[in-house]
Length: 131
Image (cartoon, rainbow, N blue to C red):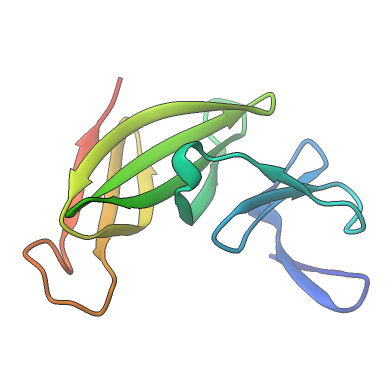
């Protein structure tokens, strides 16, 4: 459910963990009061393309999907944030950017595309299992 903040901003409640809001505009930022914003440093200045909060097992873990073009491929990485620490979950290379993702159990489902080009992997949804 969306919550109005200061009667101007709509914030998805799933972006809030421990009274900290995580916002993404390509970069990832945190704020507790919508006055002061802190940038979360994503390795290699990769672009954050999606994020969500996994609320299973009586805990909340924020997962972040980031993508960076390196030579002719995209290095796509899923991170998790626990106690304000950025932890790499999995990295994979494709000919296009990872744009969105979801998680069920130990499986991530990642949607690929971007750049307006029809590449081999454009439009695919891939499954990556992690322990």
